[in-house]
Amino acid sequence: MSSTMAGFLLRRIGGIALTLLITSFLVFGSVHLAPGDPASFLLGGRSASPAAVAAIKEQYHLNDPFPIQYAKWIEGVVTGDFGKSAQFRQDVGGLIMARLPTTLWLIGYAGVLIMIGGLALGTVAALRRGVVDRLVLVGTGVATATPSFVAAIGLISLFSIQLGWFPAFGNGSGLGDRIHHLTLPAAALALTFVGLLARVTRTSMREELGREHVEVARSRGVPGSVVVRRHVLRNALGPVTTVSGTIVAGLLVATSIVETAFGLSGVGQLLVSSVTVKDFPVVQAVSLLVVLAFVTANLVVDLLHPLIDPRLSHPKGGTV
Image (cartoon, rainbow, N blue to C red; front, side, top):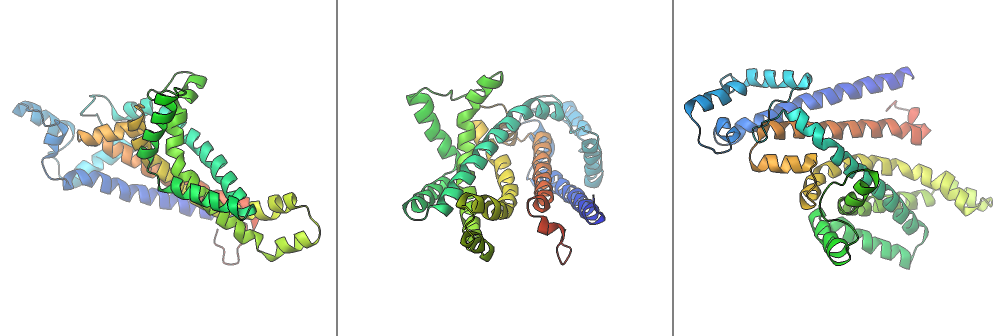
């Protein structure tokens, strides 16, 4: 690893740590900005004896000043202790870990569909101008404008209720059964982002197709497939990789809708149910987890750029 890359990596890690610190403060402070007594939220609106209220305040350090509360909470987060759920009466970390595999499977499955569908449609639209290009533009425009919950309702109605090909609810067990159960949720989650990635791929490839070195390669008789693979597609992957970081953030947020629609016991569904009953320890932990995943995905994207386009490893201004 070069000293330039090592310095870049250290700066990015420092930026991630600062982002997480600021975000953690905002997430924790949102509980105190919300109207009402935090102890009442944690009791879920249930009537409780003064002794029970005092126990809740003692457990969640509500009697301490705000800076002390935040310091104790962030100390627990660093050591993996996110507190106890007021709704489930369990450790928040254990709740999240139990549901995390379903969410990761769903995001991974949707990610594969997005990469295959988005790159294929974008490439076809860039290379086949005319009717095919217009059809892809219309289709991806509709896909991008379709909310995930609308896609979920449509997919359940067609492929589960009418055709009976896929189950509408449940996580499934075992590799094959899990893929079978997650096919419709992954498709609903991926639909919007397939359209987005296809349009970015199409635009990026169109720009590369018009560059001088591509025209030179064609004039020298280089086969079209070789020109596309070596001189167009590879250079076009830069913007595609950049938008992938945004797609990851969108997937994390959209899982809450899709998991609720399909009855999946994932982290997104846990977040929705926790917001509904104001289970703040869970909301705080999941929110922080989403931010961590987002900044990590962007770090990976930044590290992949020089590998995709080696010119970025030696910029004139030393960007990397």
